[in-house]
Length: 302
Image 1 (cartoon, helix red, strand yellow):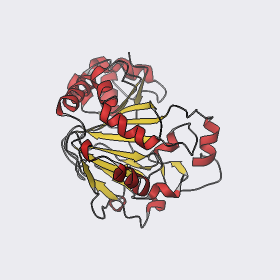
Image 2 (image 1 turned 180 degrees about the vertical axis):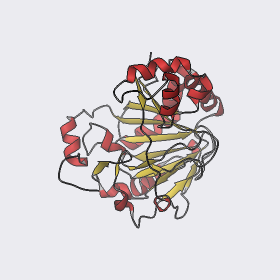
Image 3 (image 1 turned 60 degrees about the vertical axis):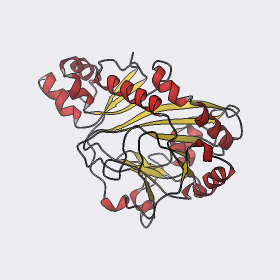
């Protein structure tokens, strides 16, 4: 059963110059090429792309599972989030605009909406590895876990599972650092893994990374289009885009600035994202994280 259903508000589009790629990333061709060189590249650049990392039978089953979840009235995960454009569809089903706080009415209206219409607006699933075996299998794929543990320097645990769905015309995920979302020590080595479940291009919302940007450390975030790095902070940056095919992935340091632009196509872009941390790492108070990454009301502007 879904614990929380979120309905985003529409957000303005981003400036095109925020996502211009400068060069192309080097990539590792399969896990047989993974070694100390890949670890050194991860430390230097903040990320490593691995081609053909997830076998077809695993990524295909994961994609089928997510598409089924998107059509379902109950995706059986901790969180489902819908794009802002879905609010209009819900309001039509309700016969008028709902109160901003009336989430129960919106959830009730879901049963009145055709499954394919619901699926066309899903933006994100979270917390599904306990209830969906196909998604758990990808998270625990042994070569992937071994690579992550070589970077973490110890056995790891999974701290977050997400499916990042960019529907046709789906919105941007602004520039951010994933560590800004985790109540974990700033010195902890948190490894993110972003897995393509179909073709990923700059046009449909490829990942953009600021090569070497993790070395700067934490950057103050603001609540604007999302919990994000200020656009002006990215002025003059020279990021690189990461086009991928299904089964390719990128392992990245949670302090590297990254983002994905708006999907300008008529096709979905599907991706999985997992985060791992060493088993010895303990959680910290939210106040610790916000004191580092920023919070609204601290006499700061963006």
